[in-house]
Length: 226
Image (cartoon, rainbow, N blue to C red; front, side, top):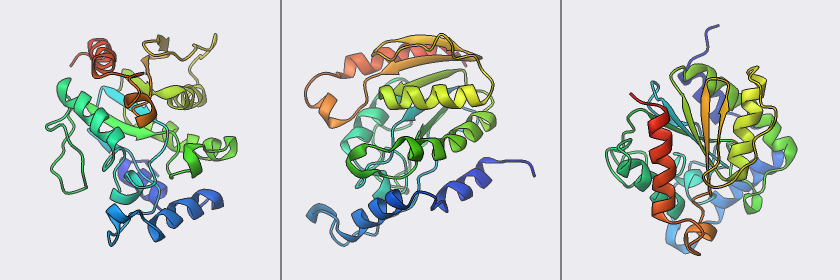
């Protein structure tokens, strides 16, 4: 059977292979914070989102328990998403700077956003086994997103997740490039760029600024011209 993004989305959203992650995502939906009381949660694994013809791929860690796990879209409905989609908007990849829900009208052009682990993990820390079970989904995305040439990895986990998927595809990842904000490397047909994650622990403390994030996307866009 020929794989498609629709088939991949079905396989991701019905996955229940990691019992600990299933418990975590469903518990978050069952006991939401007061600001989300009464809202209906997605509480399933999260597929990627964006333009199937994208030349830019963004790889994060995992959905937030009350962000993507609530809204059903990666990096949507939380402060991390505000930073990411704001940067994509400024770089010309998004039609608006906000991502609040599935019906908010957001459209990405030439960009696709995904995560290395598809379910919200406890304390944002997936286990190595959980990470490895999800790697195949990213491998399939890379096979299907045939135009991708630049990859922005948000954080060391996203960087590592992409390198593992690239290795599964047969691309040489040795010597293994080290993650750092602003780091870049050639991996097979891809140019990989590193950025600190857009989590609040980085953005609230000033470790990651808008200017720093914009600079990474400027470099990535130049590496994957339309």
